[in-house]
Structure formats: structure tokens, C-alpha cells
Amino acid sequence: MKRLKKVLVIVGPTAVGKTSLSIELAKKLNGEIISGDSMQVYKHLDIGTAKATVEERQGIVHHLIDCRELTETYSVADFQKEGRQTIESITTRGKVPIVVGGTGLYIQALLYDFELGAKDESTEIREYYQQFADTHGNQRLWELLQEKDPLAAQSIHFNNQKKVIRALEVFDKTGRSILTPKEKPKKLYDYFLIGLETDRSLLYDRINTRVDLMIDQGLLKEAKELYEKQTQQSIQGIGYKEFFPYFEGKETLQEATDQVKQNSRRYAKRQLTWFRNRMNASWWDLVQHPESVSDLEKEIACWLDS
Image 1 (cartoon, rainbow, N blue to C red):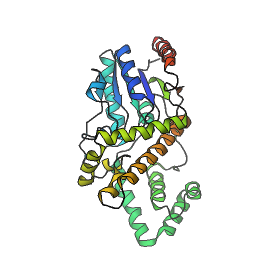
Image 2 (tube, helix red, strand yellow):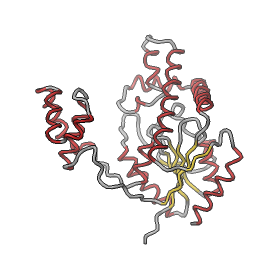
Image 3 (cartoon, rainbow, N blue to C red):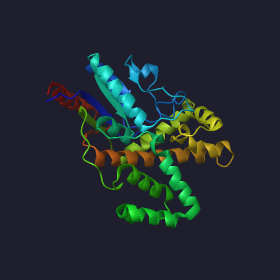
């Protein structure tokens, strides 16, 4: 039986200590870090994406950071392909790949054999149904879905045009319902998944403090650059788009900052829920119990030796 390559993975919400743990483990394990964050790929977005500074990296090689211009798009399929190539490269050099991030879908798509079609593969199908909806309306579009895929039609509201089109697209491409999974995706790596968490109120306090610190470090300058460029994908990151109403004179700086904090807290909650429901992690609270890192290191050592 073919032995799977070992990959260490650190996940969890924002502001919970993933970066510092990853660097400490990389130093001890002769590792290199792969960023599993959908926004850290962009150049010039350093503060709002909480990229580790050159000093913080302590000489540890980081991959998939600063590899896209602000005007470029970056998809989960891009990450899947480049992440796997990077794991291969790191492993070939006898080092340990350490994937670090909070973008759950990216991590899952990397570790399992999820099939991700190129975005433009089904553009024609999508455009056909878009034109159909423009001509005949959402109700008729939904009825078309009901004819082809009654299971999906049952769960999607007829006015949710985007989801109806997506369900029709999947059915036309695969011949099965969007709600019917193929088979259970296979694990591609022997991975050890570390989940970091802490008390919810403490986490929220840390997020609020981090946002204030980011503003002191120059977050507004990064947000202004994005605002002026108005690129499609990179402006979607939390910590940037919330300042646009402030730049337009529609909100005060305090109101915009409060919105960043609120959206960051909500995102952290979603991140925790995602990882708890979708992936089997070994969970640790190193914020309140930093001394337990020695037990974590023992678990990692056992996994590496197995």
C-alpha cells in the first residue's frame, strides 16, 4: 500500500495564535509553511490579512503569500493545484509541509480529492440559463429545475436565481443532483490537523484589540489603495470593504471600525463552526493554556513516527 505524504495542518479562527505556533513548530520540525488563506496571496495587503512580517517569520520559508496582484483573481482550484505542488516540493527536500489558515474550503480541497472544475468550463451553460431567466423569469427557471432535479428544487427558493442556475449547471454537467454527493472524497495525505480555539468572549476581545492595532499600523492606507483600484475579488476581504463608506463620507471612522470588528467576530464564529462540522481536528486552547503546547508536540512526534 502506498504511503501517503505527511502534512501538518493548523486551522482555527482569526486571532487565535496560528501564526506564532506554525513558526515555532516549523523551527523544531525542519518545516516550511504554506499559507491556506484566500487573502494573503495578494501583494500589498499585509496588515488587514495579518501576514507574518519578515521578522516574525524568523527565517522560515513561507509559500503562497504575495503571489497575486490586486487585480488578479484567485480561486480554490488555484490554491488546490499550487498547494499540492508546494507540498511535493517541500517533501522532496526532506522537510515537513505545514499548512496554516482559516479558509476552510481551501484546506479541505487541498487535503482531499475534491474535483474542482475550472471556472470557465460551464460558462456557456450558465449564460444559457441566465438568458432563460431574463426572458422567462425566475418562476419558469425554477420550474425547469423542478423538472430536471426535483430534489434541489425542493430546497431552493424560486427567487434565489443564482442557486437555481448553479443547480441546473451541476445537473447538466454531471447528470446528478447538486444535493447528491458522488462518493466520499479520498484523503490524499496523512495529515495531522491541529485546531486552535479559546473562550468565545476572550477570542472576541482579541479580535477587537487586533483591529485597533491594525489601524495603528496603517490598515486605512491599504484599504484606500483597494478602494481606489476597485478590483473585483481582493476588495471582498474583511477589514477593507467596511472602510469604503468612510472614504465616501457616509460613515465615521468609528462606525467603519466597529463594522470591521463585528464582521471579524462573525467570521471567526463561522470558521469555528466550519472546522468543527467538516473536519476532524485535535483541538487546543493555547491562549489560556500555553503550557499545553508540550503535550501537543508529543502528539505531533507520535504522528510523525507512525
